Figure 1 (cartoon, rainbow, N blue to C red):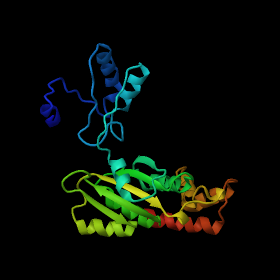
Figure 2 (cartoon, rainbow, N blue to C red):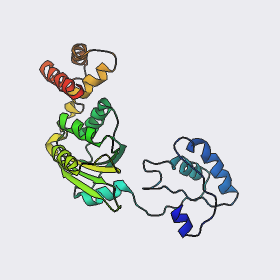
Figure 3 (cartoon, one colour):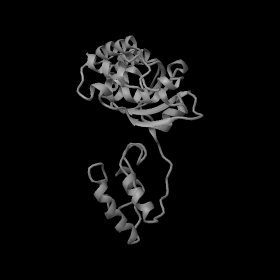
Figure 4 (cartoon, rainbow, N blue to C red):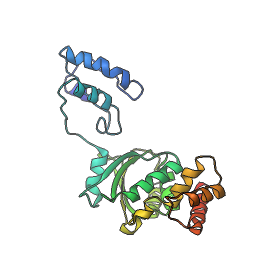
Length: 247
């Protein structure tokens, strides 16, 4: 509203959030077809980038309505630009999952990516320390550029390994405030290099245990899977890693 007032715009302001955007898109399209102009804005960041707006854009494109982008702040792009990592290619993966099992699958997917070692993600301030603990417990070998409250007065950056970033957050003290954008660059020897190891043993065990199996039965099930290339000892070691991770 402050921006609209400064620009002297007094037209109607209509909410468009994740709980109503599917139904609201049709109403906006009707307004556009009636000759009105619609601007999609957010109170932070860029619309459609882990924010609502894409349903309206998709509907407008489908109706042949011209869509114009206006450059603005995007936390993911800003964090990438100041990371100092290799940006010849990168992937934006949205928000980190909440559950460790889903985080483990995502980490496995990142390790399997043959096109890039650089990934941009978002995380809630309430879960940022839990994410650092997960990366440490999972043995993730990567460099991190973690940005807090980008473009704001008290913007801060944290850089290093997961362990080093955790220490920096603890020194900050009030780390459960503001918004976080983080960029991870996986170490080369941490990325999967062989086809037979495209899926980690931990991820294979998690998938088996999601079917209701206990750890011992999951090891047996994965051993019986013809797509498995891990030994019994490797799977047992992975099961112990999972026990430590989820204890």
